[in-house]
Length: 54
Ligand SMILES: [Zn+2]
Image 1 (tube, rainbow, N blue to C red):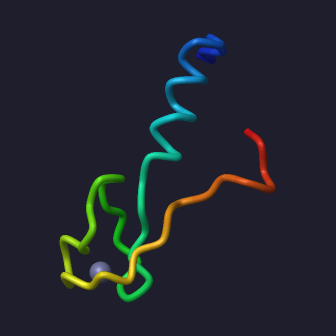
Image 2 (image 1 turned 120 degrees about the horizontal axis):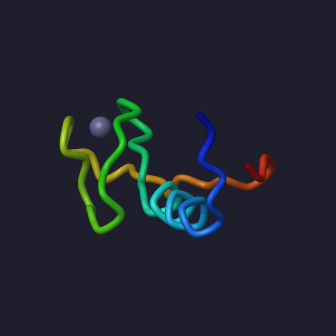
């Protein structure tokens, strides 16, 4: 079963980009988050999807 709906792929891609990853513990946080929800560190980086365009 493969769903290759271009609209759904676009939505999924947008959701994947809207994430931040903690540099301390590696937890994923919401894009709006300024602090990590696990360790409360401010050391967050945006999750990038460059390199592999899926
Ligand atoms: Zn963390």
